[in-house]
Image (cartoon, rainbow, N blue to C red):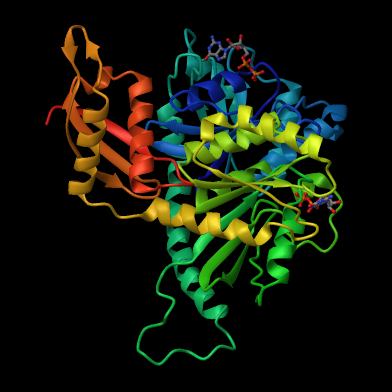
Length: 461
Ligand code: GDP
Ligand code: GDP
């Protein structure tokens, strides 16, 4: 799972400058959930080989009122969800009362917090930063976010150990997976043929979506029809519940981001919904089931979540929920809006369901299974090559600077999502339209639905 870094600090110290620098190499996706997250921005970062989620908490004012306001609460929640807290201070402005107030908060939290003195460009960093040791949070790291100076060293020192730690935990989780498969078989006769009969790994299916779209209702509906042993994972607000289940003789682990089986009675939307939890679930899942509310249509938040799922290369099924009690005219209007706004993810199957009444819920699993099969499908080099030749014969690549782009060779580059590597001449000059054509050609030829396909181009043979 990806580690999470939270950027905190008073306004103007350079948090968003650092955020932008960290997320630059990947499209910075900002999930802004109004009323819920305030000014918090979430981004997927891939910086100098370090992959993580970064949260810009907006800013803690540090004043007495500031700490008590809802915005400060939001920042504090972000801190709670983070693995690493980077506490930015301004090396030019020097230490302020607000910095001290924030430091006091951080010292009380059981979090790995690091003081980061920003804007050290063009000043004597050592003498300007010495006073920040008084914050009593240990080492003071020097950076210039605007120029990227010191950022790699900062990540190495602060994130490096956490990544190593998480990698250790991942091994434990692998073992947990085995435990899960055993758990849900409880009460069932073990087959005596020497095989377990469940050697295929369960499909990890994450049910995600904005607050109130019907995730809990859907999860309950799915689980209600199945024999389920609930496996409560100990954890904090950012942990999803992993629920093993079988359906149509297929093994699944449902990643329940809504916390259906854990929360007794949670009315507070902030407790119920966590962006970090959702992003972690996307990262960990094989297939994403994105639930949207038919009555709200596609919102910017839905698009942000889709963006994250796409970036992660996950398989995807979309459930348009609350399809009950709508008249035909409204249904048509919603459908055409979805067509228009979801055109960019034409590979995902769309289902119109009512989690409340159970309508359409069964069919979701057909698409989930299809998406998983597509994502993990093994295809021979010969086949990939033949499809490439056919695509090229049907529709030649264009001329670039008077020379025709030529595709020569194709082979598989990986699965989940399927990656195809194509070698050829001038392939880096291929226009996007031709790349899309190739992708669609492969999609049709291999009958791949529900998962993105990635094509990489390499110059030469
Ligand atoms: P935030 O409010 O904490 O998000 O701060 P911003 O990222 O918006 O930065 C506040 C101001 O500080 C902007 O004018 C930035 O250009 C400037 N700034 C940020 N990083 C640096 C830096 O490394 N060096 C210098 N000299 N200025 C910086
Ligand atoms: P979550 O926050 O995504 O887990 O959403 P919930 O499952 O708690 O549902 C939010 C509200 O939408 C509740 O009042 C549900 O009863 C209602 N709801 C959920 N699914 C449906 C549906 O299919 N049709 C209708 N009409 N209401 C639904």
